[in-house]
Image (tube, rainbow, N blue to C red; front, side, top):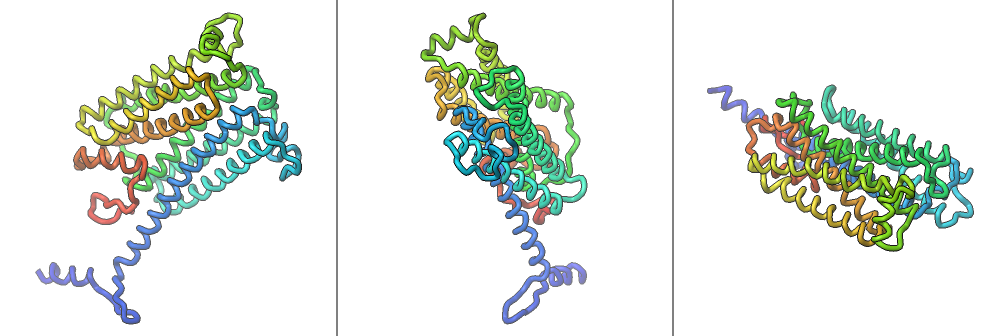
Length: 369
């Protein structure tokens, strides 16, 4: 009984400094909490920044400005700063500068996460993956320039292949960054064991099918840019004509991939619905998927204007991030043992857009580390 009475007094010990009361135990925790909040906010900023860079990259492609800096990399037309830039040069140079800054931001995020996370923490895995994928992104972009597959609206199979690989890598990069921001905002520690291997395989195949939507979509937009049609009827005829360029005939793969990928989204929705988690991911995914389908239809009807291509890509990136985060919620559900389903669902919504405040309270009752 004596120890029970003394312990609270010891924990609540205070020190008077300059007329103010300082709690010795609370101060380090407060500093740690501030650090977590700052890092989580920075991670969310990095995600948003990279989305912006990717959308601008789509503008570079849609306007045919990829050759604005010639076949030089990382220099622009052989110069560090272009002295007599044309419009295409400004567009491409801006993309290179923002992409370079992205490398710096992700490097800072990696170092910061590595210092904050313990050995074996999944936060380290996602941050390292993001850095590796971003460097691979830069490598693929450099190859496109150095092998001269950016100029003159290149119609070669090599250009199409590089474009697919580039966009697939982009989606993986966004997934790694989004998971890093999520795990910073709601720290659960190490990776857990997935209870159902079938569920892991199904989700992996589902996410790959969604990636296929984006990769075939990049081919479709490339065909729209290189072979603009003057009417919807002519565009449809081009898709099925044996005399059309291969890029035009491959456009049909995009809606087919969209149907297959949508099956995974519907499967994920029913999984949350069956768990009675109907006020978290269900409305978010439903609204985003519906909006993306509508934008895709408008793209076809309006013959893919540049502004609509960029909007379609932006919503596609948001949908992809939501699917990755929702899949992670399902995949690592074992981390939430003892937590009510409604609590898990609300957590998913908060870090999908707000990424949840990093001052999350752990299961031990104190601030999560």
